[in-house]
Length: 286
Image (cartoon, rainbow, N blue to C red):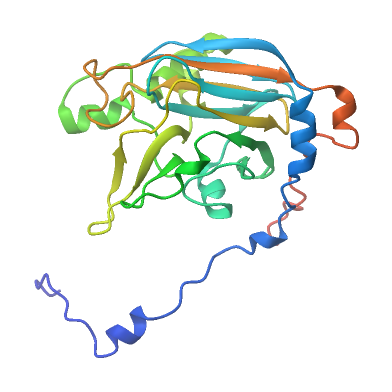
């Protein structure tokens, strides 16, 4: 075995690197976003519930299929980590990786949040986003990412040697435990990679490392979703606050987040029904 640590590029290195980039999935085959349908339904919607998630803490909320929910900034610049589960079967949950592959590294109006295998169906559709104006900044940053996992106490302990209990992973674990009656040990495996609501992130151009920067969210901003199935949501008001400085500590200013639930007029949903599970046979070639 060679002990050399450098590898000389082959003679055809430039040719290999020049191969064209190909988008992995033919997403034009997905059903179109029916903006007229969602806009008509949201125009009739009335607020029926509200949940406030305290800073550096987590909370849960339920959204019936065919209802809307909004996550709002109410007091200051604050990001949130969102988990979604099938309200009746926690094994079906939000699949950030597939959502990223089918849409993009950051999501906005018209994009869907997909569930894990074998269900693989839309759980929620984004129907409004007051930050969609942001687009992509000069650093390559965007809003509402599905690339970061969630801050967690294990990574924090590994890198800093301290036990910090109010990371988003722990906040979501406590919230799910409280909502279901499961122990923390039972609830924790159900906590999964998140939608980083309001978070401004990207990859550095030079080292391609995941970065965060000050969120542009301000009080009054919100992102809105339509529940395609009965949902149980979990939301953490991240200890990073606006994620423009430090992370996972009690030093950064943090603010609450509010979740509002809206019920549209049933007549506006005529012809709509909850999304069915994926139609794959499940035989895997056997």
